[in-house]
Length: 93
Image (spheres, rainbow, N blue to C red):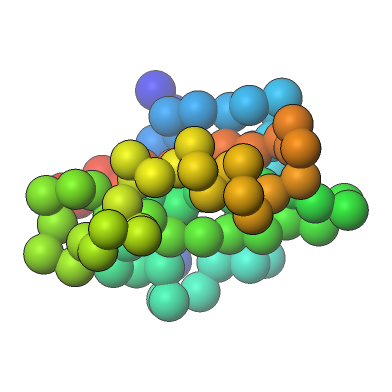
């Protein structure tokens, strides 16, 4: 798997649904806000990329609503139907 560096964090691409991943677009949107998250999910709606952070269920910071296990619910409730999306997993865990 290929490793990507965003900010000072390393990530691997664990899912790329409908070719939703764009390194260049993530670089434009990434800020240090995402540093604590174990996962970054990017989804496309109306031609724009949105990023959201999620935690692993074993993380101290994890709450019921921001665990990666709730990803399917997030995609169904908050994203465009059948949108392109991707999942990045932080590698310093």
